[in-house]
Image (cartoon, rainbow, N blue to C red; front, side, top):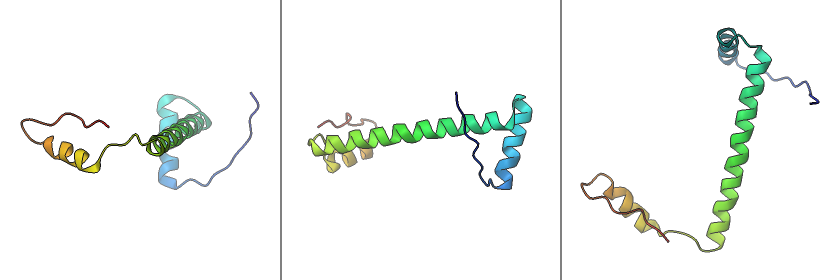
Length: 87
């Protein structure tokens, strides 16, 4: 796999945590950073996909009335919670 060197200014407390993890896991610092960056990028891509899916649901009218959601949420603290509202 081709790679590209990237640099970033990292706050010292975070850099210390990365160094501590690298020592504890017996891995290079670059491995820790690459793992963290790959996980974050994956989460952001999933968040974007879910946002687009949610927007498509709204456009298609697949929504739940806010009052129904609020009533359901309020019921969660009761002895008989309401079923999850559906469209």
